[in-house]
Length: 108
Image 1: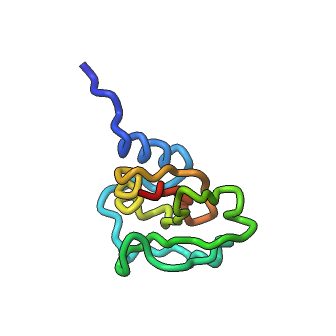
Image 2: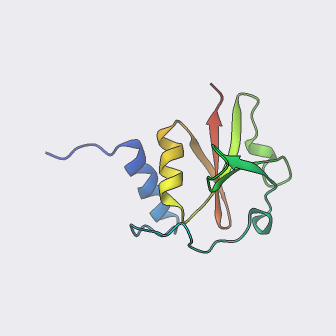
């Protein structure tokens, strides 16, 4: 009997379908462009100062995804562990901006 896909497995499946690498053991030092090269305005790391995901500010790239009841963040597409952690915490993947995934994190 097969188990249904969990949220994190589903997110990784969606990432792979969209062309994101799915190999395990991706190094935190893997190269990705700065958020600004993908049209994003990085405000601060999320959820903490040493994390790779970034809270992003409003501009033409993000305007349609901003919500007063959520924080919009961006994570490098190759940082599958960080994306999985955010999805497990309740974030919803809303769009991709080049090397970065946009995720909406509901405010508590």
